[in-house]
Each structure stands twice: as structure tokens, then as C-alpha cells.
Length: 226
Image (cartoon, rainbow, N blue to C red; front, side, top):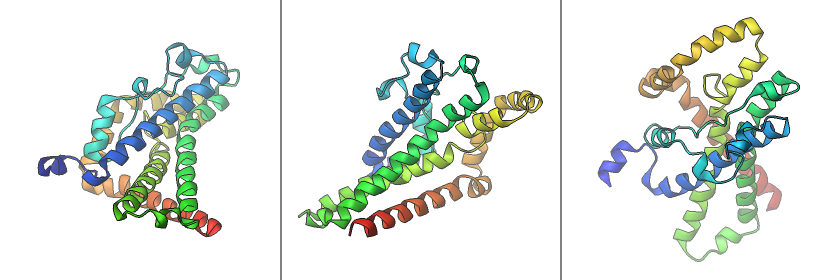
């Protein structure tokens, strides 16, 4: 256990809840991309079996390992052919935004359910202290990680959704220059992860914002139902 705690950034007592959360968050995120792409006329993801809530087809092994040791990761990107859209750039933005927005909605749903359970006294009625702690850990982990993934995926670096949104918003001349930049994306990620000074201005603020969003929404729903 000591060895695991040294290489895994996530606290071990939270690990089962994080894995369940990521199972749901990544699956819904990628499904949302595929669903809206298909709805707008691009069947690429559907024909490749990606328009599904089966988590096995969405997981990226390296993305999951990086999440465990670095605190963030990714699933297999859903392929999207924007040439199939009748309004390519607008529909491309909606398809790209669908993934992060799905994580935001999951996070808010987690806060709503937990706030309801707290407000009407269900959590306090659980006789076991460990049971109450497990409920708290699950909902706090579920909501925090979905808020974090919402924010993280809006970073304008490839292959994240924020970059695709910027790419669709940019003029054609700028998009060409952006595409030449994509090959360096992984190096930038590694720099962000392993250089503390860079991480302090990129990933760390996202964790703070995610925690604050969780607390704000939870307090709102708790006060609403209590």
C-alpha cells in the first residue's frame, strides 16, 4: 500500500469512488460527442460503435494511468467528420461542447442528490459512521471530478474540447497554424504535469475552482431541501 500511495496521486481511500466516477464521466462525455455528431448528420462514431454507454469502448489505457499518477487523464476521442455537418463550424462547436457540458450536468446532478439526502436527513439516519463517510466520499468525489473534467476539457490545448472549440471559432488562416501546433500537444501536457511552476498556474487553479463549484452547488441544494 505504501508503494501504491507513492505513485498514485489520488488518495487510496478515494480510489474506488474515483474509478466509478471516471467510468461514468468518461463514458457519458464521449457518448455525448457521438450522439450530437450523429444527430447533426455525421454517423462516423455510430458506425464505429462509439455511440454507446458501454465504457469499454471509450477507455484509453494511457489516459487512465496518467489520471491515477498525475491527477488528470482522458478517454479515447470520438472521431468526428465535420464535413458531414450542414453548418460545419457551428455544429462542430456544439459537438465539442457536448462532452464538457455533460460532465457539468453530472456534477450538478451529484450535488442535487447529495443535497437532497442531507437536507431531508437520509444521510444522518444511516446508523453506521462508515456508511455516512462512504456516502460523503462518493458524492463529493463524483461531483468534484465531474466539475474538474468540465473545466479541464475546456483548456484550449489539443486534443481537448476547448481546443476544438477555439479551432472552429478561428478564421481559416489561423486554423492552419493551429493544426501545425497539434504535434507538440503531448509535450506541453507533460510539461504541465511535471513542472510544478507550470502546474501551479494551470491544473492547480482548476482543482480549486472545481472544489468551490462543488461546495457552492451543494450548499445551494442543501439549503433548498432542508
